[in-house]
Image (cartoon, rainbow, N blue to C red; front, side, top):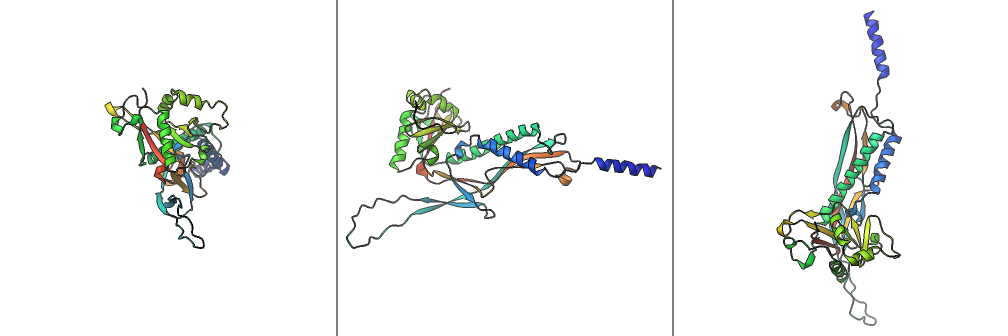
Length: 327
């Protein structure tokens, strides 16, 4: 009798076991689509104007970009009947190393991945914020190592910048002059203008400049505002990101120094694996952990970039403008 009762109990236990080692395909696609949609509407401003180069799968972790040197004007007259020597393109190959990035959140077994769960949706939104900020900062760090730098107020170094050395419309015109003298074309993604990426403190100060404020209102100008654009002045469109670079306490009297990044055409390039997009969501349900989760207590939701590489291509098309923001 005891053996029979034991068999019955075992059978009842087996009938109640839920073995879920994977998320239903439709649910997984929904979370993946949600993550990508959230990312699409958020500010990866430092990646916005990059030359994009998809990387074929299974081709290693490096990719080459090409930077073409400008041809000099052909000022020698042609001689009738004589074929000139011609010219050749000078091309520089620049290699980008790709890396993987990602993170995840662990959930207890009290949250279901079998149906769409509002708790998971909140965490997916948080993961998209994290992925967006990660990629934006990676792009920012690369752009801020460019070789062309201009300092506010005519200063000659970061250490001499002091209170009052804010971004001015005069200095914006100087950057545009630099681009034009070096034959740097505007950015297609900026509506035929140059682009400048600034932080919220710089935005606050710049709106005090009446020349910028009046033109930023556009007054019926035919050029519409682009995503995250705050205004336009002298053929430069300004875009704000909270992730703009700040050099803490590196100015005179240890004031913080802010960076504004001015960009022309093909200043930098970015790559990802062909067909995989920028970011993938990865959902692991109960039972997927094997012996590392023997009691099926953990499940995870995360994001991953399989190959992220960003490289500066044309130094003359990138100017780092260092300045101080008001307190």
